[in-house]
Image (cartoon, rainbow, N blue to C red; front, side):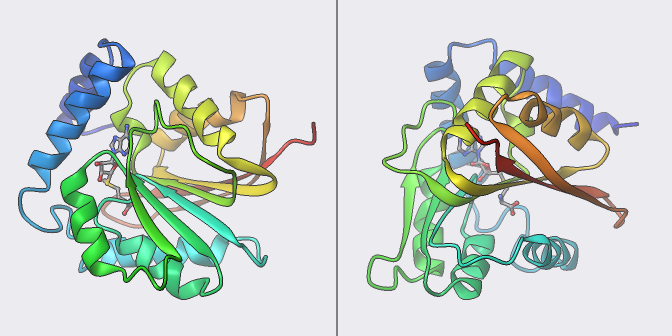
Amino acid sequence: MPSLPELAHRTLFRTLSLLPPKGQGLVLRRYFDWWHRSPDPWKLSTDGYEQHKYRSTLEQLPPRPYRRIIEVGCAEGVFTQALAAAYPEAEITGVDVSERALERARARVPDDGGRVRFIQADILTHRAEHRFDLVFCSETLYYLGRHERLQRASAQLSGLLAPDGVLVAVHPWPEATRLHGYLDAHGSLARLTEQVYQTPPRPFAITIYGAKPA
Ligand SMILES: C[S@@+](CC[C@H](N)C(=O)[O-])C[C@H]1O[C@@H](n2cnc3c(N)ncnc32)[C@H](O)[C@@H]1O
């Protein structure tokens, strides 16, 4: 049963998603720039629960020589930094709707000769230049609101995936059943694994997809 603050949170973002996608993106950008008015508002760099989630996510990844990685909703780059360390040969792109969060991400994670970059974009409208063999989306889908926007986000995420790529979604459990259900329903994705962690205070699921053969 979701808590009252969580219900209010989801209702707020569902209401925002009644706007056309461009308008929704503008409001999200303003909201998250405001939310990031002081550094690390979710304490992602210091909280033991968040660190455990990041470690568990890295452990769940199918072992492959990933070359191109994208993290959608990267905030201030805490997990992006872990990715850059775990895959020192990979090109890594962090995307977030908040430019203020990205300024801190750029300060946190050195660009390493252009290997790591951060782009301000809304996942609902972003057109990527190329496809990626590892796509992450963690703790972000519940901001996108209603049914149609989650379908659109799933199409956008699957559109980022290279033919033999892997997509990883991480969200609170049991809400992940609904959020990741949109990825399950997308015709081009095949679910590979799901691992549920009953970690207090907020259980979460890590769900991994591959691209279905055309
Ligand atoms: C809770 S943080 C998650 C950070 C990181 N993924 C993690 O799990 O530690 C959610 C981030 O999603 C970003 N975000 C929300 N809606 C977005 C959208 N439509 N497009 C891109 N980023 C978005 C917010 O700006 C915020 O930085």
